Length: 248
View 1 (cartoon, helix red, strand yellow):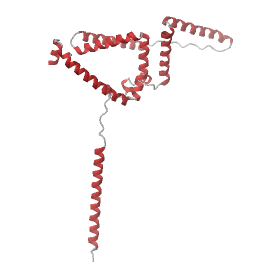
View 2 (cartoon, rainbow, N blue to C red; view 1 turned 120 degrees about the vertical axis):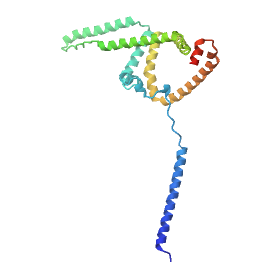
View 3 (cartoon, one colour; view 1 turned 180 degrees about the vertical axis):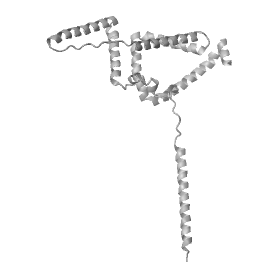
View 4 (tube, one colour; view 1 turned 45 degrees about the vertical axis):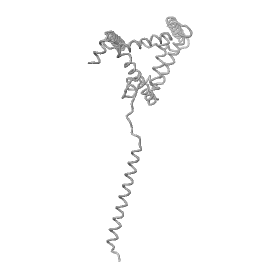
């Protein structure tokens, strides 16, 4: 006849063994699942940016307009730029003529409305007093001054002859701008820049992952091509300051 104490001890040991086996199976399956999972790599953004597009653009009203978070203002700017470009480029309107015609129409409407309101017993809507804020104009002037100073400083640094890479970048950029200037007039170029400012940031914020992927591939290819040009051409140029900069 079996002892009940021994039966209880045997059952408990069997249960512990079963639990240990189940735990080992679960741990092994979890490790295999973890090994099968892809390792999350740190996402590389274009131009090594670490902030959202809205923050890069300043995070204010201008960023909201460029990213179409204020759709009425963004649409109005795009429509206004399109109308101005169409008037000047397609119809052949002139700026002074447009300003004069706009003032004529505005003055005529306001003049006749002010006289007509006396006969129809309606109060004339008083025009608001417009004062241009001095602080705003001072900011614009200071911004223009800083940009001009920065441009002159870059020109001086490139022309000093200390860095061949910056010199080649500047020559190539100016050459590209000169070619683009042959294709478009100044007004068309300004219009294209306006359209790009109102579309490119919005599309980049929406499809940023795809753009970053293709942009990283393009940057790698450009670096590869530049290394080949540097090895085959630039390093063979008999220019003293290139060797000095490499030795430093």
